[in-house]
Figure 1: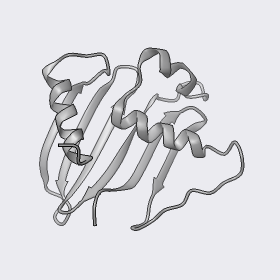
Figure 2: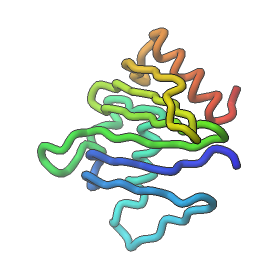
Figure 3: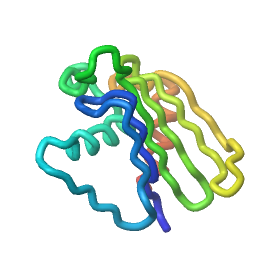
Figure 4: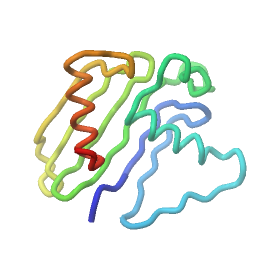
Length: 136
């Protein structure tokens, strides 16, 4: 088994507010009528992983007043479960890696990883994400 998305928890992103999606192992197909949030869900996963430039953020702000503009994605790879949480307004992330069997925390990274940032934290996040996605 390679890398797979196992969970997406959306606090607020476009039309999707207070939603949680748990995906089963294997191939998952997302079906739904037009305008039910399928493309928004995909945009959410991309935004959690890679962030949003300020010019891209406006259409994705929660449509429900007062909803937080944030969420998290959990990925599973052999031996590890990785949860990446992002606050879209500030680009603050929390990357938590736990042992898939025991749940014990293996590693954690916190900080601002704005797509425009040139900070050590951004470089470390990019390095981890590239390794996670198989690009390093």
